[in-house]
Length: 156
Image 1 (cartoon, rainbow, N blue to C red):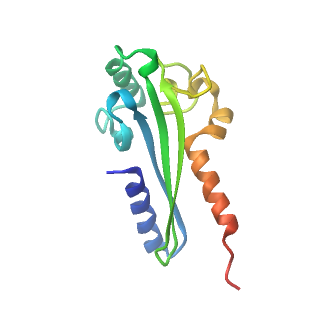
Image 2: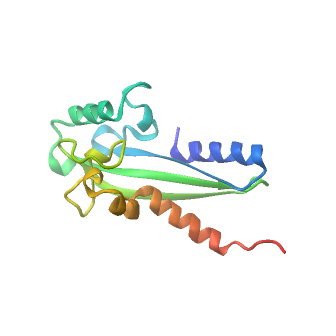
């Protein structure tokens, strides 16, 4: 039901199967005007066989009457780190922004052509990977993981 539940389930199962520290994530797009959709169903929005272009088209169609000031959205990523002993740590990254009125740009994937990050006028797909990867929800969550891991000490 949530990004955290999905991420932790994946990490728990992998840690159990491998006996190793495991990191897993789940992420998606939350659009306020659509009641938080597509949310945890971001990859399956419009059905299992829908393409990225199909999903983007559907969202833009569903938002055609939504004015500029009400198009707020965010990408959310939850990462879960699980030890072989079952200890869990969760990390969350959020990139706030808004939904564009049309798909723009050719870089990236998924909802990148319709998501304009806060402080920018171009979509993630127009900004390109260098800028997106610095400010993305996954980058923010992963920086927290790295900071946490730097505080962990190895047993002697």
